[in-house]
Amino acid sequence: MNVLSLYYGLSLLVFFLGLGGMFLKKNLLSILLCVELMLSGVSLLLILLSKSLNVLEAQSLVFFIIVVAACEGAIGISLILSLFKKNKTIESDDIVTM
Amino acid sequence: MELSFVDLLLFLLVLSFSTVVVLAKDTLVSAFALLLTFVALAGIFFQVGALFLSVIQVMVYAGAVAILFIFVLMLMNLSDIKNYIPHYNYRKWFSFVGVICLGFLIFDFILAQSNLHQDQIAKTSLIVLFESLFVRFMAAFELATVLLLAVVVSVVFLSKNQENLSKKE
Amino acid sequence: MNILLVLLKTALVIGIPLGIIPLILHVERRGAGFIQRRLGPNRVGPFGLLQPLADVFKFLFKEDVLPSHVRPVYYYLAPMISLLFAILPLAGIPLCGKIDIDGTLFRPEVFHSDLGILFIFALTALGPYGILLAGWSSNNKFTVLGAIRACAQMISYELAMTLTVISLILVYGSSDIHAMIASQGQLLQIPFISSFLGLPAWGIFLQPIGALVFLVGIFAESNRLPFDLAEGESEIVAGYHLEYSSIKFAIFFMAEYVHVIVLSALYTHLFLGGYNLLPGADFLAEQWPLLTPFFEFVCFFSKVAFLIWLFVWVRWSLPRFRYDQLMDLGWKRLLPLALGNLIVTTAILFWKHSS
Image 1 (tube, one colour):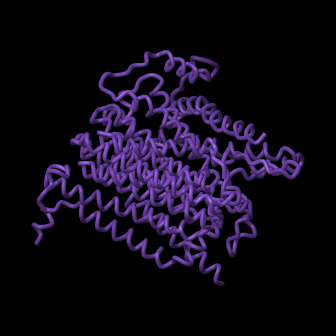
Image 2 (spheres, chains in turn orange, blue, purple):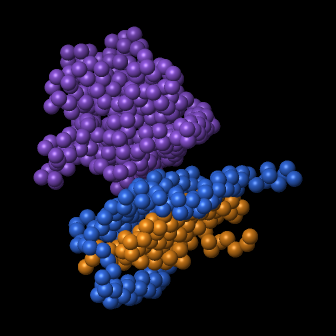
Image 3 (cartoon, one colour):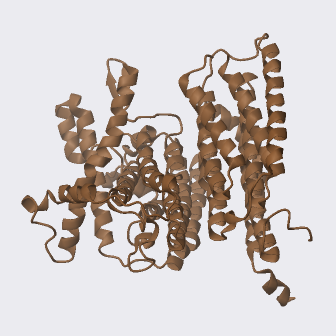
């Protein structure tokens, strides 16, 4: 088996683990962690594709994905903190009103 | 390219750490496991030949984003909130993941008949990568810096005490 | 043969810091005594040279206590991770110049790539995690606070240091450490007065503000005075290593000294000319050209030793910063300085390039 096909499988696994975690977790910050996991899975896939298809621009795209993921993580955290100050809990079951 | 021991080890590390991220009851344990996932993913990037991106992954993701998550979890004590996954959903979800992986293995077997994968994985030359990044995508790069500035300003604004802001009006 | 070489270099990378630590311990305690007008330890061996050995024996034979309220796995893991991430940046730092034996190039660093400095900075960015894990695993609110303060300090100063290094990469034109040191060997070219100064183009002359910012940054990165709030005994109940005893506590202090060594070595390579030969060794290397790597190593090590003495000197000369003063310095003064340095450097390089 090729090493690249092993890693393609890994990127799929990581993405779907993140997706499942996002659906199943109750803590809002855990959901955010699983979103970061999904983004990492996608970056891995892009880098593997850049190697398989000999396309260098995919690596630049991964650079931008990393930047955007960091920004989105930061803003997500500050939004969650504002929610926490308002509702005194960050369980997704208990936060039902805006 | 043939599998070597390091490839297999990195595969197992990423797999186990991402499983810990999803399955851990304590959110701080899943944050630390996410950090280790990032470091192991950087190792995979390095094995595949993308050196610059592995370094950027460690510096940005493992060095900044993960620390941010861990700080918030520690300071606001948000990790001892109930975080269980109801028992019956495990089977449904993991069987779904198993079906996807089986589908992928079949797809890959069909794909491996053609000569899509390279024989040798060469390390990407930095200069060629930067030429693509800074010359072709210069507009996107500048927009990314504007995005970062906007994020910094908005995070500072969102973290301020909201009652004080509304009192001023 | 290749594997053996890598293993030898890895053994050197692990052995050299751990071997220098007893020397630093001795220099620190005798140096502290010298600055404070008293004798340091002088009982154990001649001039107290065996005192670090006595310290190591004490730490090894103390009882290894596992408090009942800590999380066991992370408690044992934290000192190991601290020491690991302290030693790792040494993998990218060369000890002497490239050696050319009959056409094959022998590199004195464990790992070499195009991005020399970025690799080292990525590993330095992982430094705070040992401290975080230590503070959290102790299951103690005070240690968590101490750990968070120490980590926040480390990442804030890391930012200013990285910006400084960016302007340095711009000036020297490459991020490979060997290329940077080679360009530091040239003569400094100031437009009107370079003919009679004869100074080498060291980083400290080309980027004085950057050198200052980086120097302050390495004091903060290694949690040394005047930035050692997390270990300040009189303040927050000794910070993140409160619940640690005997050998684990010693490992935390070894990790701090390894940080000192690694960051001094980095500073030497970036700003003080690295392993370039000093004027006396220059003459000696012409007599025996085969021994040039040895002379380069000696020059490099003497510069690093000077920086380590500077660490000890500053520790016993300056009072400790308060936490808000520390954060103020890092974000409100050093970061704008580093950014201004970058802008000015870019402007000067652009003007030079266009003319």
